[in-house]
Length: 285
Image (tube, rainbow, N blue to C red; front, side):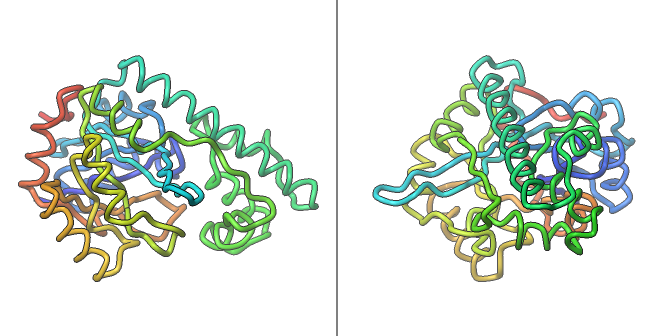
């Protein structure tokens, strides 16, 4: 059984529609795929309708969060949430706030880029998003299409980097609060790509232990942005803390070069994850 528990559709910052993403997953030989768009469940219904025969779809989301270390600036972290109740008032309200933050941040970044002479127009970027949650990847794609940079990765490494003069921060959820909300909604919180040092600052083991105290249930260990040493460390930490271990591609369609199913989850870990989620059921025959 092949299982990929972290993918994004055009509902957030991927390029495939939910139906296209599921077709890609099935063509790649996946038996199970999770749809985890940023801060939204808007693709769940389309995924349920479009599910190919033989493919199980796990409903989820990826929440934008922050860890607040004592005496240091906050660290951006992401929290994967699976099988939660999408109507839970607290979690629904926080997802809506995060989407508004992402939208406002994107508009301010584009305004700064345009003022500096870069050929990007906010209304055009929003229109091309097709109603998805607009964020930096959409701005990056616009920069690629305008010939300013060669690729989305190049845009993130330069003009959209957190050290760029055009970068704008957003008010993300305290990760401990995010974990509590996911659990309250019957969901399964898993810390996403926690040691991806190539993305910037990462948290230490003490932060992950604090997340466990708040209700964290798993660690995303096998991820394309984790090198072998980082994976080994996280796997050992998960064993010490009694956490689930997941693996996934973090697929974004053409916005990233990583193919779907680049990393996968063991079947027994999926079974444990689904047993822990009470807010929503996977889509399967």
